[in-house]
Image (cartoon, rainbow, N blue to C red):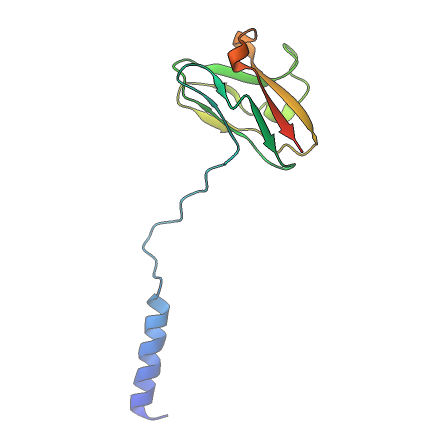
Length: 126
């Protein structure tokens, strides 16, 4: 190979190594599209969410007080133990359920305010 050809090959290889370079930033994490939000007014929205088996649901508390989100029935919370990781959400907190693998409907309520129908909901896994 001629010296000029070697120089071109080297330059192309060096350029290829820097293309798309590493700007030092990592990609942004993907936000979970399956969300149940406690609004600033203290209302669970949506009140019913349909998800595919294996999904997780992200709970977001935009209210000014804490909420203890749990599965039905009150007070045992035994219908959907996958909701247990959500637990108590302080204002501004967000937390995901475990994987919802089994096809069924999971009722939800605020354990500490279980008669408040604005905080009742359902996750339908199908």
